[in-house]
Structure formats: structure tokens, C-alpha cells
Image (tube, rainbow, N blue to C red; front, top):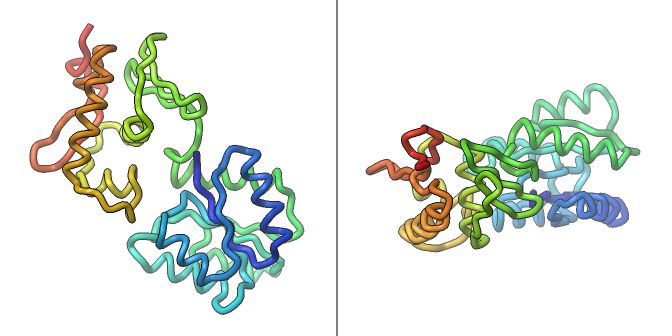
Length: 233
């Protein structure tokens, strides 16, 4: 489930957006000011931010620039949703780092389409579409993993771990990277705890002869491979 932060100081608009996003399957957090938005981003990095321009205290444009200048939030997808409709405003918003710019009044269906489009470009792993790597099929919508019709039973943490690895196949991920992307960068657990979850994931995948798809790269971390040598008949 994708996490969307809605930064909007008009409560009626924020609630309208929130209801439609939740109905579409998104997890939504609302912030009514730039200060609250920064707090929410510091707490848990969302998959995407819907950001108003005119906010109490700091403007949305200034907040977008701030996020783009910080390594942790540099790639955070941002859609500006604002009543400022002049061409110069749109240019300023996009130059500040917004990935898309929507003017009020707006269509909720268009907003949902724009959100999905930005996520497809910048954070494909956040979408709920099925992922297939080699013989493994993972469906985030039904929370199921299978090989040729045989289901693999996974706990929620192992499911998230496999989802991330399957959406980034053949790439090596360090323990700290996995901790940030799977557990959240503000969850304080030992990096070695990841080894325990990788072991559990392999044990579950062993039932469908796919355990060796999860490779340990000595001194670097883990990766998921679809090479034939990693699969047992």
C-alpha cells in the first residue's frame, strides 16, 4: 500500500483528497502546515507528497526546494496542487522540484491518475501491480506469492522484503539500504536483524525451490537473481 502525504491547510479539500485516495487503496496522512509536513516526512518517508503552495509559515515551493536539497528526500515524488494557475507559477513550482503541477479546482480522477503516473516513473515498487521475476509471482493487492500456482506463505516483513527485492532484481542492496527501504529509515533495529528475515524468506522460498534466488554478496549485502543456476527443478 502506497503512503501519500497530503499537505493542505484547507481541511475540506484535504479531507476530500484523503477520502478519494483511501478509496483507491492508498494510505493517507494529512498535514496542515509546512512544519507538520516536515515532521511527518522526518517520521516516515512517504511514497509521494501532494503539496499545496500557500501554507502557514513556509510556502510549499520553499518546502519542495528544501526537500530536493536534502539527500534523504532528494528523490521524494512531489505533486503540487494549488490555485496558482499562472504560467510563471507553474514554472516556479516545477523548477523548485515538483514532479507534476495541478491547479485548483481539480478533478479527483485526474489527481489519482497523475499520482499513479508519477509513482510509475519514480517509485514503481510503491504501486500495487503484480511483479514477476523468474518463476516467482508477487501480487501486492492480494498479498500472495506463488510459483506456478503453488502459494508461498510469508509473514508481513518477509513479504515487504521480497517485494522490494523483486522490484529491484539483480541489484545488490546493503543491510542499511534494506533497513531504510523496507523497514523505514526511522525504525531503529540492528542491521543484523535483516539476516534473520532473509533466512526466514529463504526458508519459505525453499518450499517452491526458489531459495537460491536470494543471494548473499559477501561484504556488500543481498540481491535477488533470476539466473537459471539459482533455481532448482
